Image (tube, rainbow, N blue to C red; front, side, top):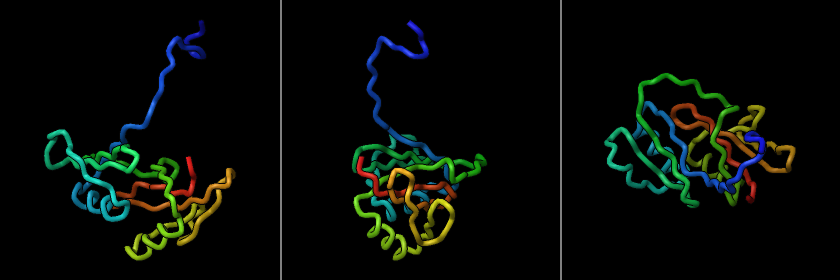
Length: 136
């Protein structure tokens, strides 16, 4: 059996969490709570520099305050789907959150080759977040 192409296991994976290094954990926590409506959950007793949130599908995002330098890039991003992309874009406008399409045109979507509409926005630390209308 070729180890690279075959496996005796039938592993099933589900997303657990993403961890982001942030400069100000409280500022980032306020953003993810206000813009995405995420539920804050217990951070395992890790202390005040850690804030954990949970999406409706139970996937978590862990915010970790750090002075470590990082360089966000649009090609490396979180990707979320939402049930009403147009309403979410209006929500962003109400909260004065800039969003753009992949080419960088402000306030509009673009359509991926698979027919899915998408926008991009950045969190307080510059991490890019894609929000699309995919129905997985």
